Length: 116
Length: 115
Figure 1 (tube, rainbow over the protein chains, first blue to last red):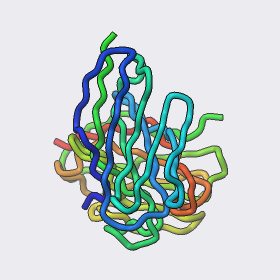
Figure 2 (cartoon, one colour):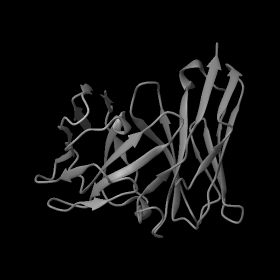
Figure 3 (cartoon, each protein chain N blue to C red):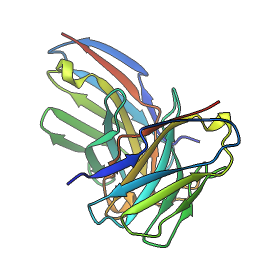
């Protein structure tokens, strides 16, 4: 059972364009985290946004959180070929959801391809 | 610092064979996790540990066992491998639990094929 669902499943853009990925979830959360996974590698943490925050920035990354709609978005500005990767949202909740109380529940990811 | 390391990187097993995956972290983290990642799926939590000597079940624990005898190591065992356990396995660690606003640090993964 997955808590988060990313949209779109795949996204292809040109270098320099912005990329927006969305994540929807089902239950109340403590925080939402975004991770990047390059092909054949482990996940790398990008940014964490707490349930009482609405927007957060880190370099070229901008994350928003709307707890009333149970959704988040990740914006990558001025994308580069090196941004090509899969991006996952993960929610942390104190509720016992699928045996993961207090832990992260990951979505299926958005596969981003940035063409030079 | 090496961060989170996993051994082995690749393994092919026959149905019914057993094996142990080793995860090590050098960040003095209390929490450690084992996930599996299947095509088109996100990561699913198998088992986790909140400290040395403790383990707990995640979302998909059946067919797996774990042990945390030392704080820096977390072992995942498959007693009798099945083709359904063909997957990429990731280990992760964190200082505290995710709901306490902690990020997780991941290893590079182990690609396991069960024939």
